[in-house]
Image (cartoon, rainbow, N blue to C red; front, side, top):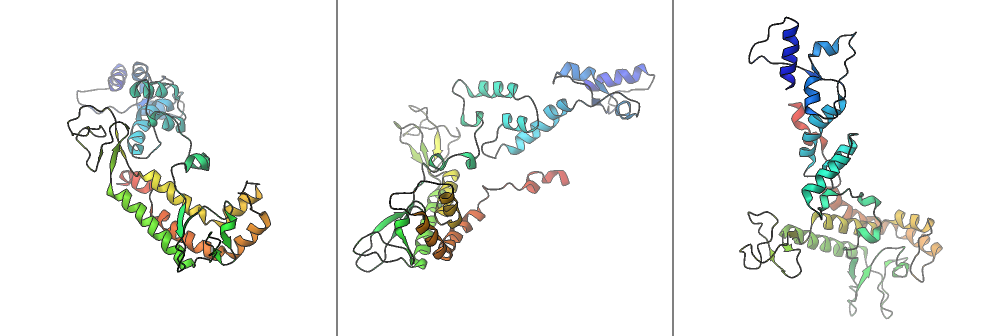
Length: 320
């Protein structure tokens, strides 16, 4: 042990060392995370801090033994983080962590065993594959036609100088902005209600188990009869926090005028009938209306803790 090696060095110098003495030491050199090599390279702090000393602390050893383990435990609740990514951020060799993660996860591995790109680096087609576009209804008496509204650049024919219009040819009336705000608010609350209900479903299609209770076996499915037999699937959230976040981001982008203009400048393909100049004019005319609706969605996004990590709370114990 390092403390024993330091004690032996002090005894060799004629200094008294007794049982239960606190031995301070610093691991020096480059030990490649080897416990035996690190023990022999342990020296008293005074030896390392001398101005004429050639001893240097083993930075990799402390990153591997002292920094990485607590950081891994603290960051465990954060999604899409694993020991491989944390080791890479600390500048450590990630090959050994990839091997250990793969061995722990089995042949197939798990979702957390692989490095995944950030949501901002994923294409919209992939990121919002399971999200649904905004559903609006025309509240004109005698109409009541429901329709989907994707965005100004994706569907410019559904927007006029008066706002979002009903696609029915016999109607064509513009929806009042207060009506659009109310319908967006209702759909957001409905989505959040489904999330807070906390339903879990089995990922095995042949099982179909659906419950609001997590068993003592964690995410293991107990089967339709609750006996823990006949099913090897895992219980997943029916509406996960990531699904809620992506859905809100999609609806927020639906009314993002600047994003629509940027997509036009970059030559993004629009649906048939779209005209770049026409869309640019409609964007400026409806800017205030769209920003009002967008502000409603953004208000819910700002309340979510998914977009930021409070480092003061995460490392608050260090200030005690």
